[in-house]
Length: 236
Image (tube, rainbow, N blue to C red):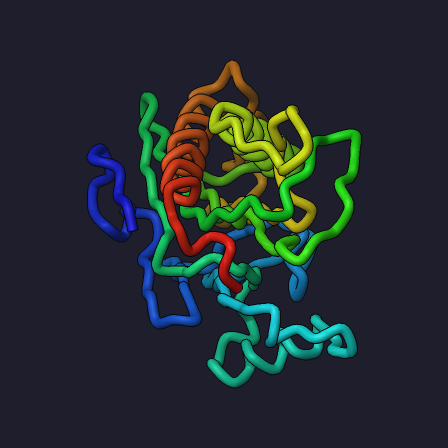
């Protein structure tokens, strides 16, 4: 794990993390408003936990129901209320970065693998190594409206994509760098509060957008550099 040197602590000050392979779990002190396309709890939800489950090809055979299998694994670990993500990356290889701009703090926790990387607007044929994903939890320390929470999620995706393109990973037989993978997932979180206390904007002109974008870009870049140098990245 890499913790950015500007992070206040391994827990980031916004949530705590617990690693017990095959699980990586992030817990907030209080329930948060979250938006994601998580397999088990997609859309807008209220939750205090986000969980990564490390999987291998042998876990998800062609005849398996991925959602049912995933739900059973979460339930067995008392994480059925968590917003869950699956990854083939060793969850010990996670990266956490905290950034602060003005009075806004943002944190990003990411696991990254690019074996099934895609270039947006095209699709690669599936191969024996078509397993990998970029799973991100991003959080800010102040409440956002639904619109601002979605806007913040778009900033996360933009920063993630910029970092991946910067890494410059290409699939065999293709000269264009991938821009993501076919199974990436983003969970964007913020505190709960009455509507009158929710910030309505989170774009690139705001402190929220700057802090969030900086945290995500740094975390994804660090995770990508580590993954590129890892000789285990083609082993599932």
